[in-house]
Each structure stands twice: as structure tokens, then as C-alpha cells.
Image (cartoon, rainbow, N blue to C red; front, side):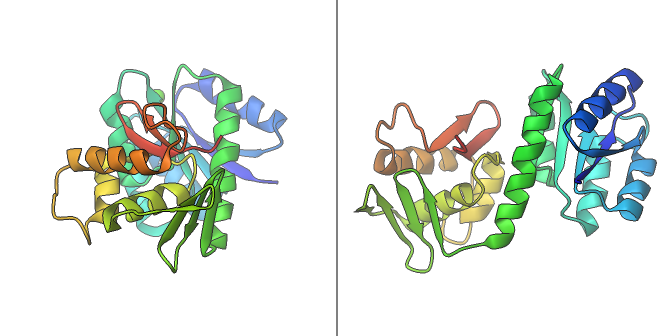
Amino acid sequence: MKRVLVVEDEIKIARLVRDYLNQAGFEVLEAADGPSALSLARAERPDMIVLDLGLPGMDGFDVTRRLRATSSVPIIMLTARSEETDRIVGLELGADDYVTKPFSPKELVARIRAVLRRAEATLGGGEVVRSGPLEIDIPKRRVTVDGAEVELTASEFDLLLVLARQPGRIYTRAQLLDAVRGVSFESYERSVDAHIKNLRRKIEADPKRPELVVTVYGVGYKFSDA
Ligand code: CA
């Protein structure tokens, strides 16, 4: 049974999440503040952490930062709907995904399952990534769509590979920029948009309605996990 540590100071929400996760077949550990979350995470090694950003004292960002210093445990943040920059900062600190409040427990469970699936798939780390019509041969740095080879620049290839390796994972522009830094001379985030636009022109059936590389409004991009 997978164990989820829920870090939330609002008792009503914590209870709702716990009951729902129990019903969905997860074992639930609970903490209401940052320090107890960190010590529980160390002692119990949960499979996943659901972390409210707005905690009294040490906030969710501090908790994420400290966790990431020693652990790659998957983290899903709970954020307020209006706090777009919070999501970006959280993802850049190493959180895996976010759910905005108010959320449906059903949505949270679906996200938890998706992130756990991804965490397990990443361990495999094969040499060929396939998704729908797209195939990426990593050692050969070769990309085909419906069997036809497409020519990508080094930056486009690296961007696509980062995204496609973890379908559904949201990346901010800064994270994607990091991924292509070795080959890219431009160092501002909007250059990521330009690369994505070119990439879509080459791999999407209809670049105006992308189905593979999807925009996450106000945050960044992800590879489709549909
Ligand atoms: Ca809170």
C-alpha cells in the first residue's frame, strides 16, 4: 500500500483529504506544520507528499527546499488559485505538480496516481521514447512522426526530450531553459517559447492546436499524458 504524507494546517481540509485517500487505498500520514512534516518524512519515508504552501511558521517552499536537499520523494503542492507565481516557484524548487484550492478530492487522487506512475516510469529510463505518432531514439538523437524523420535543432531536440520523458509533468520556462543551456546562446525565458513554436511546426499535426507539447497557461509547458 502506498503511503502519502498530507501536510495541511486546516483541519477540515486535512480530514477530507485523509478520508478520500483512505478510500482510494492509500495509507495516510498527517502533519499540520513544516517541522513535523520534515521529521515524519525522514522517519517514515512516505511514497508521496501532498503539501499545502500556506503553513504557519515554516511555509511550504521552505519544506520543499529542505526535502529536496536530501530526497526526491514526489511532492504535490496545494496552492491558492490566484497565486500563479507560487506555482512557478514551487515547481522550480522541485515540486512535481500542483493542485489549486478549492480542489476536488477526486482530482487530487488522480494527480497523485499520475505522479506516482511517472516516478515509477522514470526509473526505467529506456533508450526510445514513444508517444502516439512520435518516436524519439535517444542515442541516435533521431525523431520520427508517423515513421517520417523530422529534422530538429539541438535545442529543439533537448527540449522535446525533457518534456517527453515525463508526460504530464509541468515544466516552467526557466527549467526548460536549463535543459537546453548547454546548446543555447539565448538566455532569456521567452526564447523557450520560440523553440517550442518551431518544435510544434515540425512535430504537431496542427501546430495551432498542439496535442503533443501542450501549454500550461501562466506556468509553462508539458508533454501530453492523454
Ligand atoms: Ca494553509
